View (cartoon, rainbow over the protein chains, first blue to last red):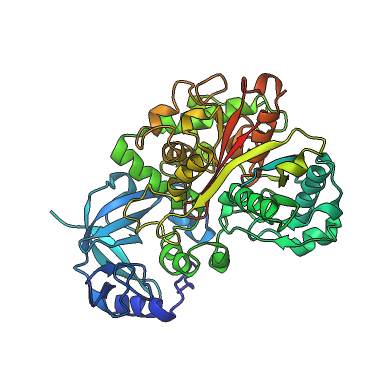
Length: 137
Length: 385
């Protein structure tokens, strides 16, 4: 099997936790233990209320496409063969937004507001990227 | 507070092939030396330098030029918003006595050297989000500026009905203005709407012609106090006010409650308030045009029109020379050269000095310059003759 050449997250600190859950098939975000605000990307403390107490809370995994782009010409060589590929911002039911991609739909069928749910793509043994698929009607 | 003035401007040639033949430092030094000479100063009198973020150090710039009395050295880390933001800091420096003459250099070999488009994981230290981009953007192929900003443009189209032809109107206007500027890389290369619409899609809705040029070249300006400016040979251009700001969060694009609130949204009212002016007082605007949508987005956030109206605002020749608000009379990053926003200040100074021939904005008294950088940092300077 050829080596995976696309950029990978560095599994340190919060990113080790976030992607560690992904490897277990769970999409989790930080949630403030005091004001209960969800947040993404990971932060040290709650910008809403100042609390340092938080937990990795399980997301419903469901959301909708908030915005997207379709990359027609990759600007990073490792993505050249993927183009055209869509990059989407998904607004989760919890309110946080995640940069990801939607599979199972061609880029020209992608629409803002499309309902999607999370799945995981194992790109290496350690890194399982959270990706999305349209919610079947 | 006493006003500060821009008293010297300098530029290199702007080019793609065959490249500048100078190093990244070299293009900055050539532009700087020209700005200092135009101001009637000696390098030893430059006692403040504000290098462009990640592209140079005050120490090496001073050592090469002969700035042997350097006191003030600072960089505003706002990417393309740095030059206009640096006008604010330079004005404060010269009026508080931290420096007498501050040099603002910028320049790079954006064509023959490293390309911005080639962001890879190792570059994260130069991206505002740093490890955020590395861990949460790059693995999904969200790797470069046209992609980062395209999601804002897409959302604007969704919410306000902004159309591709309106983005095209920005590209065409910049190209039209470049025909009046022999320095412009796109001088002699006019463009039609059909050309624009036929250009390949890079990051929908951004086509090839929505994107700024990649060029070699540098530009620089010198700032001093109004009092010192009176003794210098050039006609001073007054910095009425300058301000900068950041979106929130500035290091992450997707989780902004209001995705259209950028640094300029904060900076513009501050600058107009300080100057006692409104957008209606501007005779022209030099808008940081990294991509076409960013122009209409900034026109909205400066307050030239309401949010959502940027698309119709840029149509019908309103932003062309002879229109209500001429924008980027030099051709901008889209059609002159990508000089990191410094060329926008240089062009504003030229317009306010006057004598630009067919490119001259009639009776130009007040001009607006904006900067846009990183993930939406913003800056604005209000300049006057």
